[in-house]
Image 1 (cartoon, helix red, strand yellow):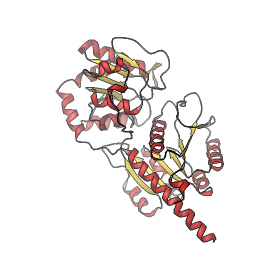
Image 2 (cartoon, rainbow, N blue to C red):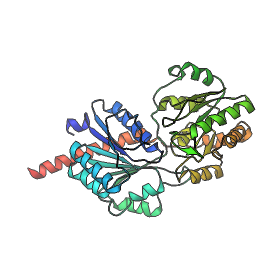
Image 3 (cartoon, rainbow, N blue to C red):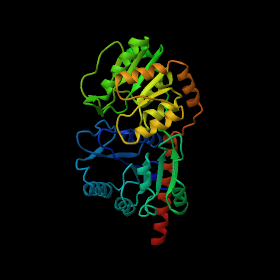
Image 4 (cartoon, rainbow, N blue to C red):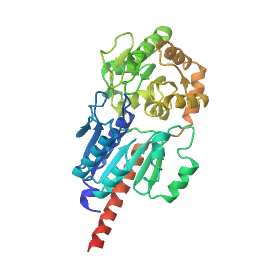
Length: 372
């Protein structure tokens, strides 16, 4: 393998999201940070949607597409950036296009597509993608069902795309309470509830979801005496609310996992990010639909399977459901959750990136031999 591909790969991440959702961003950044540790000399860059609701906390160089809602402009933006940067591997998250995959081939780049919903998964099986896309890494949208339909499994057998399945994504770095702020450590050293409304960019009836979750924490504390920590989310707008319980804006993922593993109960949203991470930590959860068409169905399935409790995105409803988790009902849920064995996609995708870089090197060698 050429040294630039094995030791100094050029990785380009292109997560796509809109309307306050940012799980695609978090997943891509988490994977990119793991790639940085695997290849310290790598060139890692991001292509992000622009606009008021995008993320501006990416720890890597970024180019923004302010016209991302216009599909032709989106395709032109991706093609131009890929053509100019000429990366070794482009990792798309929840959006790509056959013309963009062709552009990857034209510059000698491999392409990988990460998806987490039935709709985004379906695109990777479209006829125009089957011999253009190099890799498809699917986050299973529901822990209670298979990732692919029988027809999709058949197409997998005949297409050139290499596919893999995972359930959650977290960079499980060593981290402990000593790395946290003193006010967080004080609460985490005793029984506490953890409230995590995800990115915090959504609103319900005009209220920021972080404010709703903090109000639920205050109600829970008043009713039970249980302390609580609310992570408002990096997209939270407005002041940090104050009260008897603690509200902070955000933590990095390893620190969040430390709290998830110690929390007595967790209240979160119905997306595949924080909810699946909490379940992977063996937590008993209340799940509330805060945005995205997939959240109500996921919550319905997990409630039916006895893996979580559902609650409306209202402070009183969230607090009431959280109280139920403090009873034997919560113990039964925790026991069922402990039987789950979710696959963490971060170490899996790092191995698959290595595979794609090796395949790119093989393709380059074959092309050079053919030319000679």
